[in-house]
Amino acid sequence: MKPLTGLKVLDFSHVIAGPFATFYLAQLGAEVTKVEKPGGGDVMRGNAKGASQFAAFNAGKQCVQIDIQTQEGQAQAMELALQADVMVDNFRPGVLAKYGLGHEAVQARNPKLIFCGISGYGTQYEPWRERGAYDHVIQAATGMAMLAGEPGGPPVKTGFPVVDVMTGVLGAFAVTAAVQERQRTGKGQFIDISMWGASLQLMYPFTVEAMASGMSPPRVGNKGYSGSPAAEYFETTEGWIALGANTAEQIVALYGVLGWDKAQAAVDLERGPGFARARDPQAFRDKLAARLREKPANTWEAELNAAGIPAARVRQLGEFTAEAQQLGALVAEHQTLDGTTVALPGLGWFSKSV
Image (tube, rainbow, N blue to C red; front, side, top):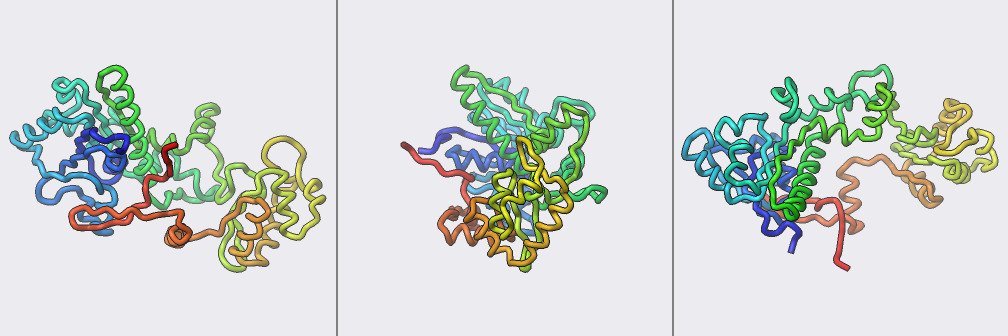
């Protein structure tokens, strides 16, 4: 039996953030009923990427069409809400309330209901609550687009809807916490999830730094978080290698792999605790980059990892998933929705009973 078996979830969400939250709940055993408008449904059904994208975010759910703009549809939706344990909404704040289905109206009749509202800016603060949002818009608003890229360069959007996905994960996390709280108190909750809040969580160490200092972290391109001179992406004779020699001990080991005198590392590095720092960062990087250009990335990956130095050849996503499946580390879970079968990567963790 899955941990959320028996939990009834009414899903009024669409596109990515809300559907991903309820997808997680469904995969954990919840009975999710997804409400769509007649004559088209979720806009993801018509997405250029095809039915597989819609199925990927909504597998494990039961889809129904209800026109909440009609009195009959509102009555149908309310009846489902009265039977639900959880209700999830990611319309702009106030849309469901206009049809008598906002959290206050529903929870007045079903006080044990956990209502999770997901939106770009949340419901608490004017004038933000009135704003619409998309992933790339929130990346811009929260400063995420100014963390990637090089100093002085244009903003850089992360190459996938990272804020949407994190918002969905945060929604599922908040709902499961509320379910646990309801078991203790017998009371429902209203949960207000914002995309901007999810974005700050993704940038957590930088968010904390900005709140403490009032300053924005510098843009560092492809350098690692540690700031070590040997934590970066480097070009090789074939492809790129991500190197993660963060400590003095790792850099000593790196010198050995590169065929350099290990004792020279003590000369090249500053003394002190924490992550490694070079006495002359640019000269260190130039020397390292020149040496790494002498072999292909796959060779460096094998040699560096054998020496205990974190390193990886830069891959395309399809390369990695194929490699992980061949190894047996990634096992596709095939699920079907509306006649479309998709291969899913699971929930991102493995567990077993002991």
